[in-house]
Image (cartoon, rainbow, N blue to C red):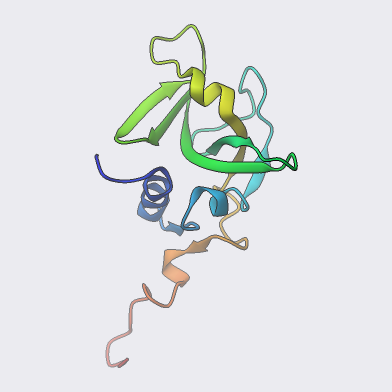
Length: 135
C-alpha cells in the first residue's frame, strides 16, 4: 500500500476491525491503556499501537509516528509505503531509527469504549437504519 501516512494506516487497520481512532499519531497516543515498553518487549501484544517521536524543549513527548506491534519485536507501519521493521538489532529488518525514537505504546483492544475511540457500529454516520426509517 502506498500513499497513506502512518496514522491513516493504523486508523484503517482498526476501522476494519470496527473501531474508530483519532486522526493523527499524536491524538492516537492520548487514548487506550498505556503499555510498558521494555528491552524485551514482553508486555506488548499484537495489535498494540507503538509510538515514535522525540522530546521537545520542555521534556514532553512529541509523537510524530505510529505503527502496530505484530509480535516477535516487529512493527508494521507506513512511512512512504507499508513496511515491517523489527526493533531487534539482530534482525535483517531492524530499524535503528524506530528503536531510538520509541516513545511508548497503547493498547486499544479491550479499551474500545474510552474517550478517543469509538465503535463504528455506535457512530451515527455508520449506524444502519431500520427498514422504514428516514433521515
